[in-house]
Length: 274
Image 1 (cartoon, one colour):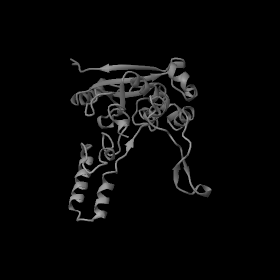
Image 2 (cartoon, helix red, strand yellow):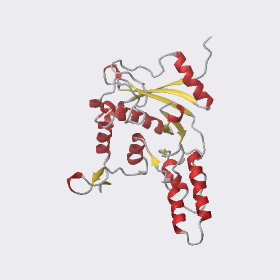
Image 3 (cartoon, helix red, strand yellow):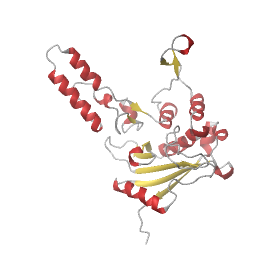
Image 4 (spheres, helix red, strand yellow):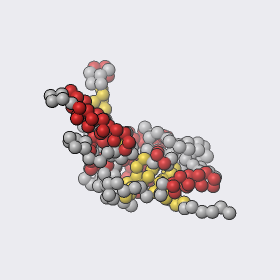
């Protein structure tokens, strides 16, 4: 699991922090580096419980072990798809969930057979905004991966993605903040390929930038510069469509879409308006 999120993989984040999943670091009695504030608190509590346990206090030790294993690896849809079908070698397999028991009333368990690339593409597209948000996000994700960058959630900084250099040291900082938009999609940016998180594109109005005024751009730039990163506005468009709009019918063929998708970056640096 460590290989998915660390410098050799660059996929996902811990469900309780912005780093790797804490359970992957604490599978022995001596934990490695803490992961975020919550990770440190969990580690310290676990050690205190274990140290306070009397001889034979198996229940206390068990509770400590359970607390160390509460954080899980969280992947956005583009990350999961890339790790399963384009990483070399593949890093994971994607299994749909199915209900146990008769009448569909049982619990959910992974199906025995993993999804193939075409089926997973169709499912991810069908569950994203306008049936095309995942395809747009994945085109940008793949663009950055090919350039040696690992996009991860940028929610902490008020952006869609932050870019880490693949293969960098485990504790290296991200270099870029990315605001992502897709031409022609409704309100919301396809940063995770599923649930829109901002107003990058306005319904019915073509592609309207998230930061529509220079004041808004300056506000965002100030935050990005304060955390020592560079701001990128990245747009995905379909050169074969009228106005470059990204629509569901045009992204159904994965290979054809990825071959023609246009990803354009605009780098913003600090300037003086006067």
